[in-house]
Image 1 (spheres, rainbow, N blue to C red):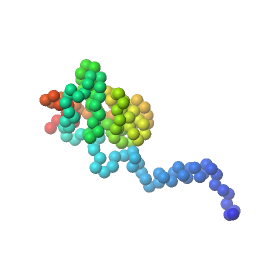
Image 2 (cartoon, one colour):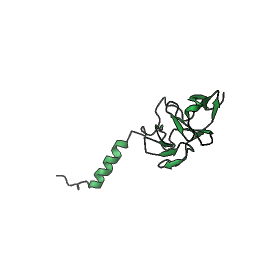
Image 3 (cartoon, one colour):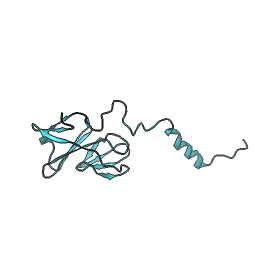
Image 4 (spheres, helix red, strand yellow):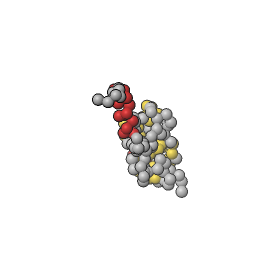
Length: 140
């Protein structure tokens, strides 16, 4: 036995909690190489306008976009890249978007944060209907 005092339980737990984070960065929180951008850089056709019901929302995982339709029929679109850690949101329950990384929740109709840790709303995107199709992103 050495002359040093034994490490306390608290010291051991602190070290164990810090060790996995060293050198790992935020890989689970940030998009990797080749990730889809947070906002479309060109117009994206998301399908027939009739596919988005009044009062409903449609989550497009391929383009990280959600489109919602209000009761009056107007459309809104938001990026589904979480404003907390940059993770792509991949779940829509009713009108609530849920981020898989830390559990942030957003309103699909407004982009507003419903549950933290995110504190910033989702980015609103330009959306329009062209020839009966929902198109999100800049005009060309």
